[in-house]
Image (cartoon, rainbow, N blue to C red; front, top):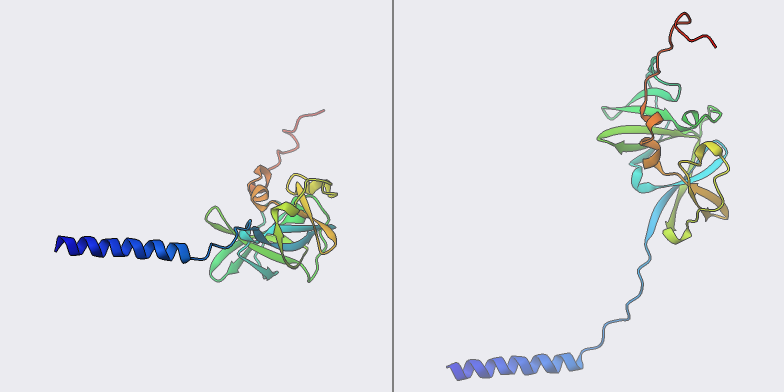
Length: 191
């Protein structure tokens, strides 16, 4: 019986060798290109792109309740399917002129276990990009955006700057939602 087992095992080894010799080679390995979806948008006069991975959805401007003690760039809070959605006007935060328009959109993000609505001037669609398409020159022409848009790419024959949403929402000034109370005139230093 032990002899039969040895013969069976040898038969399997021979069959394996025969199949390996007759097998076709694997196809040539190609470098895998990594594409990522980008959302094309605009803040002020600056065309931007942002990584879609930061955005949960895009919606039109909802009705919202204003927060009277908040900074001027915090528009208020809206109801997003039963969740509070703080609305932040990115152009106002950056000190750019804000023109009310029907094309304004809200980029809904989930950041630090909280919903956040970033109001932008327009959203134009999506585009797939590769990291190789990004470069650091030229600098963003909108001075206020330069700290948050350090790279750019040519998309649809036009240069767009990559808005780093993570850097924007983690900015120290951005996270200060409430206004700092002003000291009464009698307590302010005389120059």
